[in-house]
Length: 406
Image 1 (cartoon, helix red, strand yellow):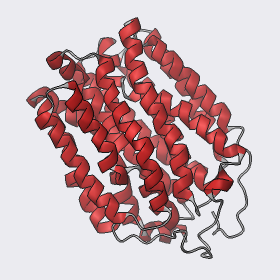
Image 2 (image 1 turned 90 degrees about the vertical axis):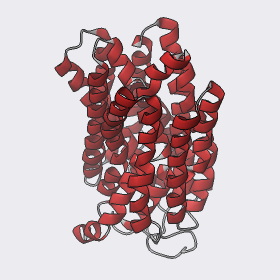
Image 3 (image 1 turned 180 degrees about the vertical axis):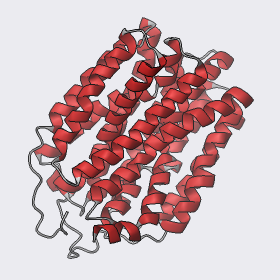
C-alpha cells in the first residue's frame, strides 16, 4: 500500500518539493545573504537595513498565511499556487531592474508576501498530507526538503551570477526558480490535485480537531513556542551564514559553497527525520538532532575554523534545521489531524515566520552593535536546546477513530 501510494503520487511530491524550494519565505531567506555585501557596497546600507527586507516579507506572510490556511481547508488551491509562482518571479525581476533606494527595496519585498501567498508551505503540505497516508512522514520530509534544496542550490548559483555579472542580474537569476522551474511542475501535477476538504465531513481521511478545539490543547501552544525558538535559531544561522563565514576568514565563493552544503544537510535532515517519524515517536528524534546544533552554533564563532571543521559544523546545523521544519507539518497531522490542517498549520506557522521576522533584523542589529556574530550564535544555541526540550513534553499521539492507519 505505502509503496503503491508513493509511486502513484510521485508527481505530487516532486512538484511540492520544488514548489517549497521556490516558495516565498524560503527563496527570500536563502538568497538575501548573497546580496548583503554588494548592496552594502553600492548603496552604503548597513547589514541591519538589508536584513529588514526579510522582516517585510515575513510580516506580510503573517497576514497572508491565515487566508491561505482557510482556503486550503475549503478549496483545491492548485491554481493559486501556479499564479503565485508567476507573480513571485516577476517581483524578483523587479528587484533587479528597479531597486534604487531602500524604500523601493522594502516595498518590492513586502509585495512578495501578498502576491506569493500561494507558495507558502501550507498549500503544498496540505496536498501531500491529504494524499499520502502510509508514508506521510517521508512524503512531508521530501516536500519540505525543498527548503534544503534551496539552501544547496541558490547560494552558489546566485553567488556565481552576483560575482560574475553583478547583483541586478543575480536577482533575475533568482526569478528563474519560481517561473521556469516550479511553475511548470505545479501546472502539471498540482493545479488539479484533489484533496479532502471540510466539505467532505464524513470521508475517512477527514479526521481531527477544529481550530477552536486545537487551540485549547497544551500541545498546540507547546508547538507554537517550540517552533518560534527553533525558527529563530535557524534564521539567525541561514540568514547570516555567508557573511559570518567570510568574517571568519573564508573566501566569498567558499562561504557560499558552504552555505550550499548547509542546505544539502537540511535536505538530509528532512528526509531522515521523516522516515524515522513514520516508525517512532517523533519528539526524542527531534531532540537528538537539535542538541548537537547548540554545540555547533557555539563552535562556529569560538574556535579557529579550518575548511573541514566549518563544513562539519554546517552539516550539523543543516540537519537540525531540517528536523525542526519537517516536524512542524508532521506533528500537526499527528496531534490535530487533517480536518482543519490548513488553519491549525497556519496559526503555528505564524509563530514560525514571526521568529524569522524578529531574528533576521535582530541578528543584523547585534552584528552592527557588537561587530561580532558571537551573541547571535549564543542565542541560537539556547534556542536549539529549548526547542528540543519542549518537543519532549508533547506526550503520546491521539488515536483518531476516523483516520486511515498512519
